[in-house]
Image 1 (cartoon, rainbow, N blue to C red):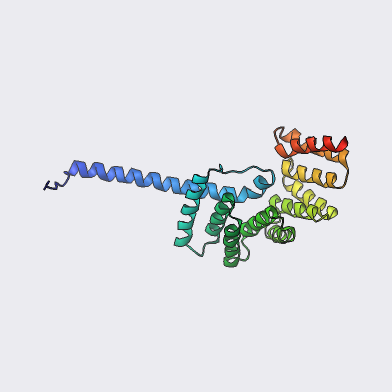
Image 2: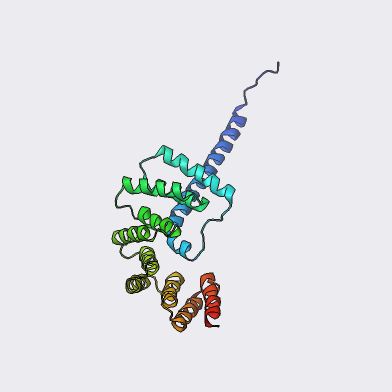
Length: 230
């Protein structure tokens, strides 16, 4: 049987330094994920409405993200921010039920936790649960009155409910806090289009393209209007 030889002092030092570097890299990687996940949650509404996503929708990456966030939740189950991070991971995976479950848990842990209400509004909007989306967006707007994202979602919900005056009011408030935002302008164009004001809608969609010439929803809307005019 081969004998086991203890490493000398120099070798032990080399091993300890290698372990430290590995640990530092892992800690840095963890911190980066938490930072980006938090940013994603804060920006979620805008990216959702404009059909853009901060995360690359790679299934393997999202599965790893879910595992990582589940481990964080298991370590700190009463932290609402970790619940929202995990819920957002589920949302990106297309698992709306588990996303809602985590957002609801975050809300129960802190009844004034803005991100829980905002993300619930997003997933409810995706499911066309418009009344529920409006309720969550309204609560989020009360918790953070100067954040345009909840006001944008309020306007979107009111538009779907054909409450156009309230939709316009919410979007105007959102625009005051985020002038030049293409999502807000686009939603305003949808109000005009839904009311049959096609020339107004066309002008509004073109306005959004003046801020972002590659804004896909507005480009598609202009093509849609062409077919309506024929």
